Image (tube, rainbow, N blue to C red):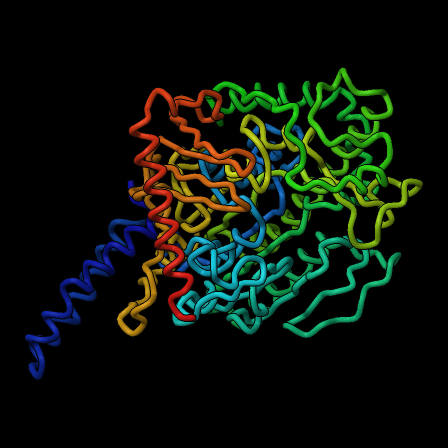
Length: 565
């Protein structure tokens, strides 16, 4: 069944298909102009008859786009985790949960794709051979960010949190911004900007905490919007830095989880998997733990600094020393505390929307930029082994043992393009536009789809490319049809490339190659979502076709990246 807003857009499209020839034939005749006016009234009347919903449902929705950083597939309660996330769980209970939603496997490529609707290689936001690209790559002029696309529809746009894109927020279309550029210091950032203007460093001991500050700014934007632009829709982009390392957490949040993880990562992973099966999140077998797979980058000096409690492999919990078990359990309590706090702060944002009467027609997306991270390193202010874990003087990372748990039941971690690195939660909440509340969506989606979905929800047609001959069509697809029923979005394929890790998914088949070997693997994700059984030998022709498709797509994307150089 179509949602009210989809019916509204359907009627508008019907009107556009009928009105132009009527306008042409009726020029200069009052009688036909009167008929034209009657047609508009008829179309609007059809909408009122078809849909008995709140008035704001017929207007473009507000958009709240919330991104976590390094959050794993199973970290939320509504995706199988034991971490307390009541506000996100409530959004899921009254909205939708996508179980096969993808990102690019890394932070900055995902953010470029999220706000443009293109793969990062197309827009030079991930490495492209022979082209200035990657973390410092500059987008082509034909790839504006979402706020610029929303301006013509009257939207005001606000940014709060991490950026990790080229240029600056205000310079790329946002009306207000709090840019927390220092992700290594949750308590005392040295680099942060308000409306693209750098602010003085924050001193320690002032009560500043990054996750709270990001929510504070978002709430301030929403309140000012209500005062200054109450008749205009808003786009609020909240990019939390949590739970990305360093594991910096508030003591009161850490206390809630102080003994929770003493049972070890093997037990917690098994419990999460059992809950996922009960929730219907997964049906596939639990992936095997790759005991010898460590962090994607080797920092032996960091392991030495962190002391004998640190290990860089997801070994059996029972094989660890008591010192290692205690150290590792503490790290997971910090990760949980950071996610708990993220949920608390997002709850304040939702409360603001609810109390101001805006929640009904606000389309909310919650997602993560990549899977949980197996990285172990020490940066910024360094690590003091004598400091309280989670404090500003400590610098801890989750590591592969707990990252394996966070990505339950999937394989591998951030930077890899096996499912654990690229598949994370997507919660969609929109009271005025989602009627199938509390349900799961198994249709594959990708961060390239968010821009297309927002534009369709806002009633904005994709901009024409006639005046930009080098501009490729956006590969992202609108997910709006999946809001009404659990259907498969029609698309050719999904594609990945990062740090020498490669993958392509076409329907239920996926090929994947890791940077540590030169052969391709083949999986049937319908039967084997957790990538346990490599079918490359059984289906050599299928493997060949998909690998060739990966390479031809790679060449096409290289052309896009070079198009305006």
